[in-house]
Length: 72
Image (cartoon, rainbow, N blue to C red):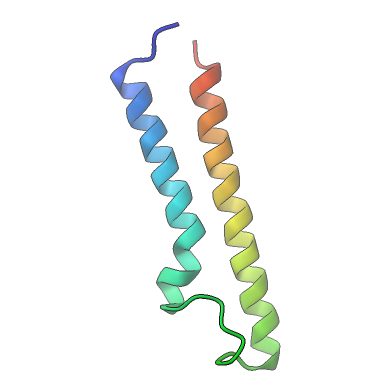
């Protein structure tokens, strides 16, 4: 079971996309999670957005690793 250059390229690409999804709330808002500058109702929305981005980013990274090791 030999991994070619294209397989490693897709592995690195999948990791990069996963990390970009993980960091997308920070990229969009320009700051980390800050309860001092966020108002009441928006605090919950921002927390849910950041948690959702974390889960989706980790799922993308997991799927990339799973596909890389299961590819024959």
